Length: 328
Image (cartoon, rainbow, N blue to C red; front, side, top):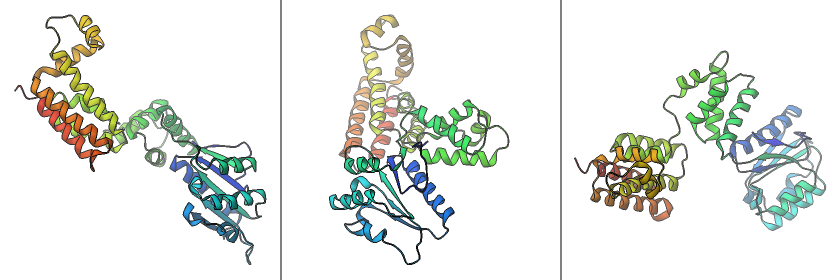
């Protein structure tokens, strides 16, 4: 959820939305526009990319109108403005015009920091729109969405929704809106399961576990889910490599050794020794070598060596699954 400054006047002369979460940035803009149009239905809204705001353009936009209309001027990716345009914006910040709200969307960070600092120094209303990379942040977002909608949802339901939808904030917001509109009473885990069964966020390790046991169809389905919910591609190749290497290590380990001894020698927890033993039944040495080559090719592909890294990952998964059946 976007965080705002304590003095949160939506019609403040300048609003500064800082961060890289597109949904929150769009909401920050929408809130200002809605407030402006509530004050004046004829509010003129200009939504500009940085290249559209050339030196002198801002002065034209904020010049008095014959009709004295309210204006909202939105500047996206303000960190990418040219040096001359930044000078114009800084000058405007010192003496903002009446009936005009300037909304600056800035990614944060070092680029364009001078503009960021100037807007803060000028007393801009600030909305924080950070990228939500942690599951706990997305869980808090879901809870806030239900609160905003005036609906009650159990902690288990919120967690299940995050697990089912994944990391896309727009999809999470849409799911919360749908459940709030469709469901009477408290939204619980059973409701989420009914609406979103089968949408659990796949991980690279789940893909790998299916592939190394020869379940090509299931592994491909899980891979496509992982790609759909934005799992990092290098993380998927790492998981595939880890799964195949574990089989290779155990296949060459001394026979008859106790799991605890193997765990120390191979650097695996004892429970994983038992799991890998189950997975390695159909494997041969040639199969391990072929699978590792496929993973290496996929890893290169996802790091820029191929135009279609998703296809390279699918090819690697199929190769691994076939190698898992090479003894049969």
